[in-house]
Image (tube, rainbow over all chains, first blue to last red; front, top):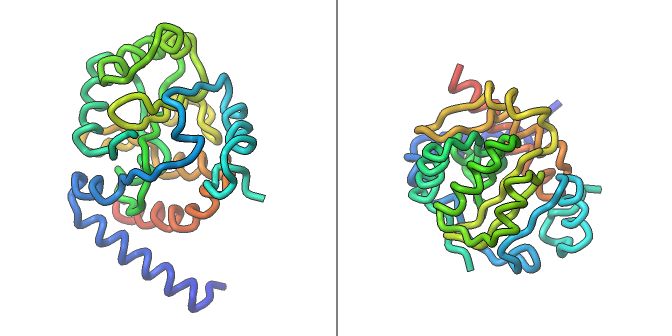
Length: 73
Length: 157
């Protein structure tokens, strides 16, 4: 059963979704896409991986954990 | 440093990919944002159909968009990779040829949503791919993304 806190959170999200729905796509873009430097990840112009699994392994092994690209435990 | 991804650049992707005949879908958070999901992200993620013809068309489109690719990189994209990360152009772009959690491109294509001419994965597919990827950052975003999917389905019944 959902708690009062969960209900409040869903109401808050719904208000955010309603607000976004009132904006044009162009405006949503302006708010949504931001640039933040990500160490290692942003330090090469091109990378390719033969398999998605190989990409995931590279993320887990080579990226700082705090970026959040590693597997959720 | 790549510039922030802007609406005009999304239009360029749409127009250049259409001109070159590339079959693709916006996926990931950038796809969700196109559908109306309010959140922030850095780059655009494109699910590109992995066929020899489409790979070659994608490589041509990237060059036309202004990405700097050497001969070997173009050849790699043409031969087919599952994941290509580009930060050598006017904006950051991830090409995902085999996203986690989605069986094949054709099924996702049939479920696609058209948003002002942008082909976007259905929210169920975006969620499935994030669930299957299982990264920390995906797990964090999933509860709100699922709530958005329910909201979106309700509005688009």
